[in-house]
Image (cartoon, each protein chain N blue to C red):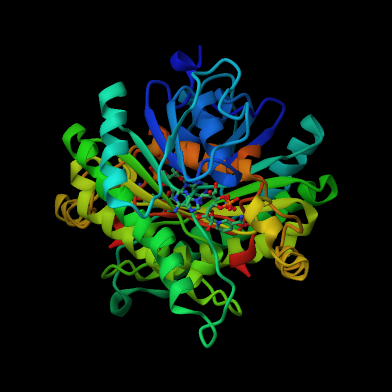
Length: 239
Length: 249
Ligand SMILES: NC(=O)c1ccc[n+]([C@@H]2O[C@H](COP(=O)([O-])OP(=O)(O)OC[C@H]3O[C@@H](n4cnc5c(N)ncnc54)[C@H](O)[C@@H]3O)[C@@H](O)[C@H]2O)c1
Ligand SMILES: NC(=O)c1ccc[n+]([C@@H]2O[C@H](COP(=O)([O-])OP(=O)(O)OC[C@H]3O[C@@H](n4cnc5c(N)ncnc54)[C@H](O)[C@@H]3O)[C@@H](O)[C@H]2O)c1
């Protein structure tokens, strides 16, 4: 489908859900994949190298990227996927919870781009995909910190795209709608039902649908695409 | 071979304005990915352009996208031959450079007829088989100039903005019928259209493009392959921007 032979890719939050599907699809396309997560990733298979890594930990970012540099001398693809949801409404949101969600979903993406750019800039090439959300482009009640973090991911992506375009580095965002993962399957039926009712297609997507969009965006077929938001959302944002 | 392994294997596709530029590149990629491909245009493609190595020959259909009757006939002909229509790319387009104070009623009517009403007529004609099949992917070409303001090009800006609304409406209305509709938004792409433009205008747009170069028709063609294929089965009502970062600024 896409030939990513010879490319080195780093995917965060790859133990399950969307990240797991992205790591698997990139490896199937021929890329050398390093997958990181705070959870056990042993079911990813031997062909994918796994590392324990909390995306809020700048020192671990440095160590993971240094190891990639030592082993492969390059990093072509970064997928910032690790993320958590938070359902608190604004009036009940604690500062601790705000900082936790912003730390993972937003600062984690910043750290990822900073560390990847250390290898991508001298190489004058690279493709970054950040996983935002339909909540990064529209509003639903509640989920105050999640909203802020996912909107920030979009603007940070565009900033990176515009700042590093002349250095051959592309940065794009994918906005999943309701995707069948441990995250959404752990939500209440009421919340899931409301999302699916508001989705024009009326059904949820699979992690592989998001992975296909990521594979397209990091491939050479998308060499003229940078700074864009690509929804994979069953039409949610078109309403 | 491609009919068995390509990303569009077995699908039937129609690309309007396929005689040159973006439409031709898209049709050729579709054929190479295994689709039975038709191009519709008021001009004939250059000799040899209908053949793609290892793929089914592309079929040329003489069609003016502003002609309601011709649309019905073209779709019926395809159904008679291939029994289905899976992909429609509404790509045919014309441009006029006048600002709103100077644009003539004729130029306005012409641009809106081809770029906007042509998309409506094509979509309506294709929905007939697609709704019956309960599947289909419609791809409409807008433009960066359908998103942000540019000096002059009043009619084109209006029509290309209209296409975005029409696409979203198609997506939302027919999502539960298995039909998807998405917009592609090119930046500056090296085609006969772009090459006919004033050199200063081209240099200006490429200069503003963050990646620092103009795109090739293939850059749009690959986006269309993604949106036409089942890889994007959960993508509808989206706007795929392929512009070297122009709109991110
Ligand atoms: N599933 C959906 O419907 C949906 C919709 C929109 C956006 N998203 C986004 O997609 C991404 C993946 O979501 P998912 O549904 O697969 O979620 P998930 O909870 O199933 O998986 C997320 C993974 O990220 C890991 N993770 C969490 N915090 C981390 C940290 N600090 N450091 C490293 N890894 C960490 C988790 O351990 C988990 O393996 C998230 O950014 C999420 O916000 C998901
Ligand atoms: N080239 C660019 O930089 C650019 C940028 C943004 C959007 N676009 C859009 O992409 C599409 C293709 O553009 P292009 O650059 O390849 O243009 P082009 O002029 O090179 O090709 C357009 C094709 O459409 C055909 N056509 C015109 N009127 C028609 C009609 N009434 N019925 C049937 N066919 C008709 C022409 O004969 C021609 O073959 C257009 O919709 C255009 O607005 C192009």
